[in-house]
Length: 299
Image 1: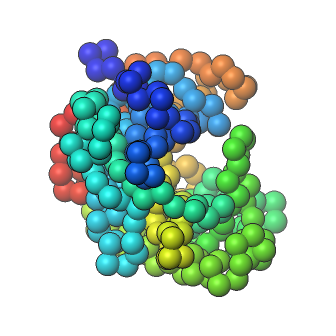
Image 2: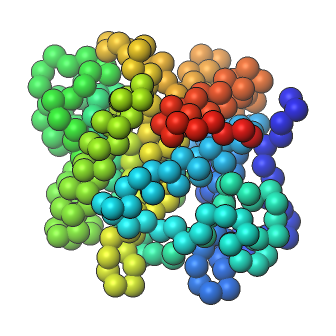
């Protein structure tokens, strides 16, 4: 393969604060953060090999697009998006171009704000067992991937290891307080509805997505982390959507399908991704970006 996944420059290691499944978080001299979206990809809570070349650039540029799109509705964490404005030593690292952003350091809300417009994933599994999702009763007789009567807010805990756990809204209130919980629920639903309508006009169904928010020094809610990407959302092509099964997608369901079909028991180590899966995933991410932004990323 001609393209190689991103590798973090060794010169940045002294500034590394945290390494997630996908993002590396660095500290700056003035107390802000530099987020670097790597090309790592995970599934079933395992980081896979190899990465998807250019994936971090696609995620970063799509997030930047959505943050700008929704700036009139909600402030976001971005301070700078160009490599030259990241500050030292980051501005000198050419490999960070397009995949790194300078952001405000926030007090992060310890709950993921998940919105579901369609019945799929863990929501579908819970619905089959209980007829509800996160304590929200749903009509009987729904099929996998059916559109819900209205989008629902289904928060989840943030787990350092293992799967995030779905929780009820009442449990979220216990964790963050009623006023903040209601504000985040209403804001998440508003972003989702507007984004879903925008995306559908461009040939993509946003089946579900998750948001992360933080509080700045004044206690203002700020949208953070990533925004409506193929890693944080399920994207389905409108023309191939058919309820009753898992629709084809622009997200990493393509990778999950390979892993489900190869006999892996979902315990580390994971099997290496074949080149056709790597290239197929990269192509899907790029296509989603082009459809949503109207621009072609040449990476």
